[in-house]
Image (cartoon, rainbow, N blue to C red):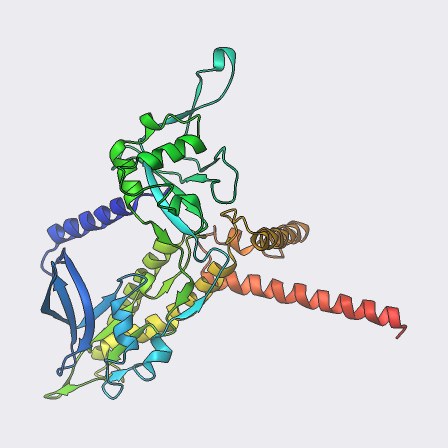
Length: 429
């Protein structure tokens, strides 16, 4: 498994769209990419279509009109907010009643919520000194790109300890090199602009890292421009686990001169639908799964429409409504299971320094080890910990959590029975 930088992923998607457009034989419309455009809100038209208000290069007042709007606009989704605001009349749009309840986010705080993260781009194929003596004094260790690395700093305090996390990367020569993620508590020194100034071209940031990792040749592995960029950016915060209970709205069938329309709709995927800290590394993967399920739902609806046409029957719902209703039925439970998994998967992996977090990590580790032991002792009859079951690409999030929750119920029931038996034996009943 490899990671690629986000900008390279975006470029890959754009290149795929261009390639598909060139191969298009006219059977469907080309995909047009609009750059420098931001959605400000979504609302219905009087004709039952979807109107998307956009701001282009800072200028507002422009609209796009579509049959289907797919909200893939991130954790602060304007599309989802438009649905929550009740812009779609439930008399004319299915699944639009009680919009604040259906599209208001369900949020859950986890031990990793609120942690701050920043990326530092390292020049490709770099090495670090081994720290030997004699003939090995100048020996270096090459960091292989196919491996994870976690390098701890020489500084060990709660506010100055650093842990550089390198994810495996397939092509380190592409783009700017290999990215190292720096994740800390909000009170860490690297967020203190008095210690790491954001107006000195990155000099104080470089000096701070030289002190924390004195064996690294920072002049060689990080460019001056990158130090300036690192110092000037704010980074980001890990969000709460959150999801929208409802996934779509669709127009109710309208009959124009005896012909039922295919319908229109608005649907959510990716971070617009669900968001969580990157503990599991499933953010982009789950978004792709959403898109695949949505595509499959439309393919099934199209097949049903062909069957209905061959039998001269009229489906009770429009084509779009059937597809989006199927998407909700399939992906709604998956979304809830995904958020449940994100809440318990691996929230203590960032070495949070507080006593409560360290105690929580011990309990979490004990739980993982117990489930591993039971899995081995029962020859696989008892499921593995959820974080390990996730490695099996054949298992859905719902299947993983069903197994994990079943074992949890058995463990709690066994503990309760043991306590009751102990009490009965003590009182002589």
